[in-house]
Length: 149
Image 1 (spheres, rainbow, N blue to C red):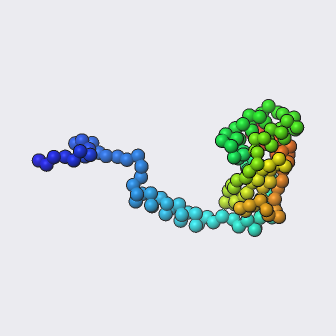
Image 2 (image 1 turned 180 degrees about the vertical axis):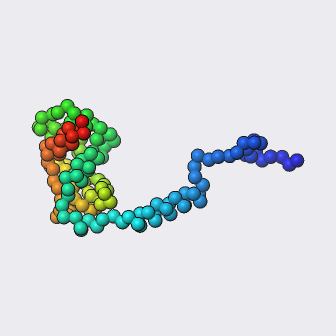
Image 3 (image 1 turned 90 degrees about the vertical axis):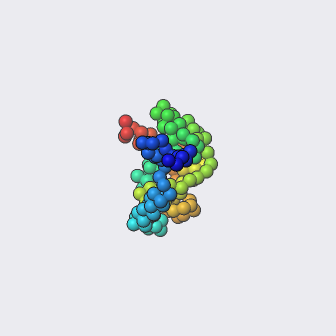
């Protein structure tokens, strides 16, 4: 009888892995890429305005800070007055931007002391956009919060 290699499983026990094999990973990636090709993103030039539904969805993403949306929701639940809300949102969002995909359409979001600026596409320089001062962003978020309660 030949000696068992040290890394061989004990007799009667099978090896298992928590991770897919290389072949399974390659297959999963190929399937995901094929699905992506079947469902192409919508061209930003075909959008003529940013809908309220998209604005609502994007506002629920919060700022770039970790747990930003949770802090915003907690603050809005206190029903602050417009002045306090605008000051809070300006501080919470800070200055920055991010990209989001909503219903297979790319949007760019920029936030600063002037408020939140949302454009279809990869940047906020387009001629089609929605701009919400922080007070208006607060109003929309409070409306959405009330609807969901």
